[in-house]
Image (cartoon, rainbow, N blue to C red; front, side, top):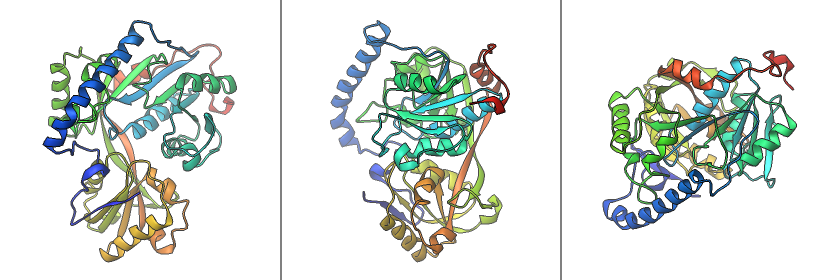
Length: 384
């Protein structure tokens, strides 16, 4: 795939960025009739599930879904890691179910981690599930398109207290106890229009299915207010609201081992390189490090890196006289599998994001609470 590159600190344009709508007005106008057709199909599907025309399946444990109504970029992966980690800290046996988008493995269903060791790499298991397995080593992580079937398959092998669905809001065939809907406060315009003219996967009225609205990047108050105002105008019934922000937890090498102090790169000249749904959001994260972004390279989401890509990134860094090349954890997992050479290994730093709850923490804990039974064990050492 072709990389999209920009110079002089400008974010990339075109299809490489899903941070905000990038279509020109004439193109959006031409695509609007297709959005009407798409919207009608989505409404019919949701209505079919509400009317019982399509089968819904329940699993014998608590199910918590994390998802969105827009295409990419709301921070589902760090929030999934945060929620799973919070549950594990409370002594629950946790499984995480993901589609494993663009994975190369041929199995319909596969374990990326059994809760003790990582079994598949980012290519075979998918970059996001692999990252989740690395960040949540005590969680069982499984991939498969049919989440209901996948959940039953996992539970037949490993007893669990709770399953977390990564990107599960549209997976209507599986019942869930909690439906967390993520909305990005930094991109309120993403709620303007349905695909393909806009970024909405579903009409905003779908937010009525949510147990709570989780506003990510909520440190921009005007953005949070704009999101909630749009929901009100769409006549979505009031829902509990939880506000989160992402912060720089650490800077690591590509292997996730050696760390660099956050303040240690202040004022440095950096090149950013990523293949994620929302490179604009990554740019904003990097800007908060108080560095000078001298160039940027972006690939499409879930990009599989080659040595040629790494060479291009190194060439950009050399020409820009960069002190560091900054990338995301998701990208680092794939880059680390290449023979990058000592120069790029030395320059690369991975921005690890943490999650902080700004408002609604008590509500979040209430939603995550898993009923205890005699069969459940609190001792992590007793987990299978």
